[in-house]
Image (cartoon, rainbow, N blue to C red; front, side, top):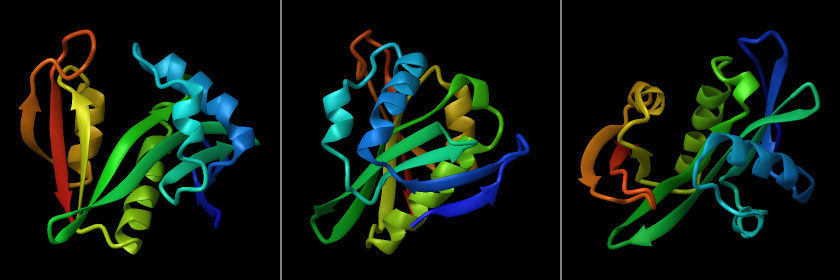
Length: 157
């Protein structure tokens, strides 16, 4: 299902399930966004999953999110694994729109709560997640390969 929403940058933004044809653009955004990017085949594994969504604007992939659900003891936990926006589209509401949609998808698939990890230094992302009612749960020292800590954030549904 494709969801169309007006974007802050003026063009309409479509949120839809990722397709194989999107993977190269997704990997390019990943490489431009992270110092330790996921490889192509990591994204390939999530094709067809309801939580792998892309934001498309003007026929181009503007961002993506990868999320899934795992069954834990007595509950289903959503996990936002990766989210990124093309550098030229940051600040246009693409990340907020992707997060809104993926949270709805995770809830529709039975997630009781949703977690994510964010770099301690990524203030922009932490602000975004707090706007969506994520709260810091704990710090994982040295989580990233470069030694930076991660903050695990969680949101109840």
